[in-house]
Length: 561
Ligand code: COA
Image (cartoon, rainbow, N blue to C red; front, side, top):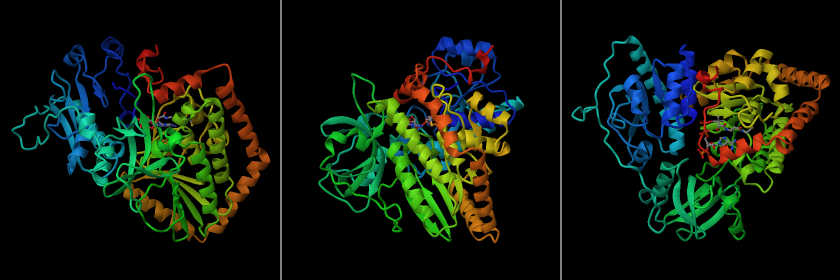
């Protein structure tokens, strides 16, 4: 039972399914609908990984319900991670407790801790919290299965219960004083509110929520002033330096708004703000905003593109293609596409499309720019290429990774290799060429029809990706480096490169890449410009985060009868 099928819920879904449990999903819509779902499925156990309200009493009295709370033992209340970041807490955790009449005060089934890291709240959630939650939930489920385990009542006299009840965090707790706060303090405040709800602030006299901040090392100016812009971000001076802000959301009580890149949202004000470019191929390690950069070591090139939320708009696709082509001209034998640490890629940028004057035209431009990038990767004939999935990938992002010669994922990565849940979108990115090369017809069909997330291991088993290893990010990167460097020095390298080029030439002869692209785009044209508005409706709901009115049947198995 969950508010939405978010990354934690997806990961628990794939892990518990892997353990052989019979799982169905119900979104928390209202008490009556939840009770109906419980009646239909008659679960042995209910797990709530991500809820925004209490479970109805009629349910927790009759069924054991596990609440996954992103806090240490004893921590109670909303915004647990936000407070942990704001208070500079060195260690945090996840507790699995049993739902009862008091919020977050139920008996404890399992708990895990982790050291905190200086990063955005979303980053902590997608890595540390997800890993700790998986461990704690699996332990709690095993204990539940024994039928003998007695969960521990919360007892503040126990020194292990280090958490406390905390209040809701308000925007006044988060507010930035640009005339006094240091860049580090501002970064902490924005990190603690990323990606929801953001820090409410004022830009050019209008209220905006700020997201996606990073420290600038060299620029400075009058505190509070916007002193530079670069690609999607603006740079704002603090008393002791400056910070970049990548994304903002306009506060508007009259109509619904959504997150946009800062330069897009503020474009009418930025004409006179200097554009300070960044050389993606610079070897100088500096702290600044960069959404594409390249590193070269021992005949291997690493191209990083940690785009916010893994979404790639038209210009980001174009800039990444230019950088990629430049990488192919470097003296490297292997190119590794690193993506970002939170997401590898989630496909075209649905928020920027939604914001465009003609979303249909912008969808068309975005998918064509994405296809140009995929084409450049598929047709690379001077290097062997890797995709190194440090973080999750979804929709077009997964198919982008298949354009490389070898796809590797961190073990805890979750993939969504399908488009259909976005209003029956057909998809492009040459998937009709790339997918059948890797998986059987049956697997390809079930991936598209089921619309479910799969674990890296499951992707590996069906041949979608080549391998998965390491839970930890550092270990994953080490192993990727090792694999890439070994390949670059392999005496067999010239033969492997030649085989790849031969295979490409044969494939091209059998059916040109352009034909795959044309066929896919014919379907996409109907999605964008045809009579069926499903894609536009689904994208609107996605960007505006319209609450679910029902749980889709591909998740709610109990409702399929
Ligand atoms: N465009 C714009 N924003 C995107 C995005 C995209 N393609 N994919 C993800 N996001 C944003 C979400 O809106 C969310 O924004 P928030 O920071 O305001 O909360 C954030 O990324 C995290 O996404 P979330 O859904 O919470 O992450 P997840 O790991 O739980 O789920 C996906 C991942 C891929 C299943 C889900 O984000 C998704 O369905 N994305 C759309 C994929 C798609 O259809 N792409 C277009 C076709 S190629």
